[in-house]
Length: 272
Ligand code: MG
Image (cartoon, rainbow, N blue to C red; front, top):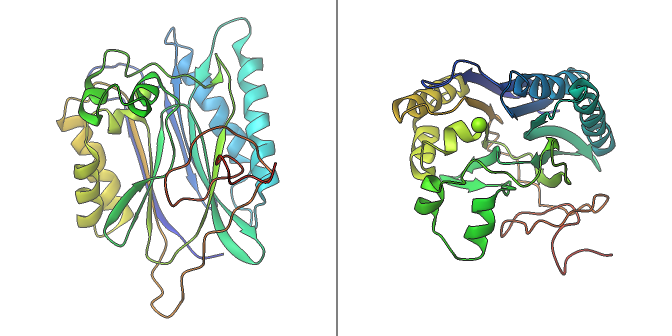
């Protein structure tokens, strides 16, 4: 597996007493969970998810099946810890999986935490939010700026625990020189994508990038808990980038971003 450089940070923000985000950053798995519901229960759900993923840390080779099994474990754990309470959490994650002799990022998402890829000077949002404002965006009812200020901007349409719903998956080749960002909505609710791209461009290390992103969210108001994970794939000038490859074990219904392979989700692209 390609050795990765990474850094993570989380902060309660300037308005909230508790930090209900939970973060796991340890090769080959990187996860952020944004717990919700308050009543001192949100952090129970997000912590339960991170604990489930801790079992994958340190493995030399991960399979897609190992990650999806872990997500099922996380769902059961959140349900069990609910004990009658309504717990819920988002989940955004990236795991290095070996497929056909090559390394691929398996990106998985439920809720409105996000995965971005920064490569060749371009920031691409990989995941698609499960949120009311995302649905309004896709319907053309609002634009990006209105989305960031929308009164329902915190309302998600799928989660682990409360509400439920399917997790979406994407498979991306691990490419030398790229920088991956995972974050909770405490970042994207405060900092526009253009500024995120600039900070990722300027930072010379994952640590510097994570610190700058957290600071930007706090400077913009820090209305929510904010968490970031930045992962760098070391550059290898002499290596040809691997080509995207579609895998279709997993069913979902989310429209993929243009140009990004999705696991069995793209209309017209599945073999079902
Ligand atoms: Mg949040």
